[in-house]
Image (cartoon, rainbow, N blue to C red):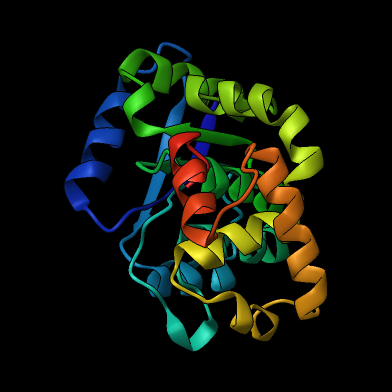
Length: 218
């Protein structure tokens, strides 16, 4: 069975490693592989290809293509969905921050999401085969994250996660309305809920961030 693959990573040795592992696949796949080393080259390839890829493998951290508002590999996902709706997406990342991974899962909904430190060659092959066959595959960190966040997700909805992320980037509470479609009073109410979730009776933004880091959310 021939499988067409696009590998997107800004480190050529990493791509060569993926190619080497897949060349030993025991599933009989004949691979037709193309590569892109930046968000810009990936964008042009995705938006102009006449032959849809079966699988696109994307590294999360990539040089941005500011002109098209593409700042990381995750920003390529909706572009792939637009131009190649039947293509399966396998995202790989070195990041292990819970909020970032949750954002990728919820907004991109990739068929595969793997934290690189989780996997060895054998699991990489299993993940690839699973995704080619139309099923989803998540590495151990992602599986644990999904379990842990079933309850917390009810409290830490999209807005509350954005508040934490913006605070971690040094944005002051008074400036948060500039980044969110929320009033200052609505943000203050949400910060009370966030503090209750983290079991902070009284505290500052730094206390929220300290607890969020301790629990692996940032």
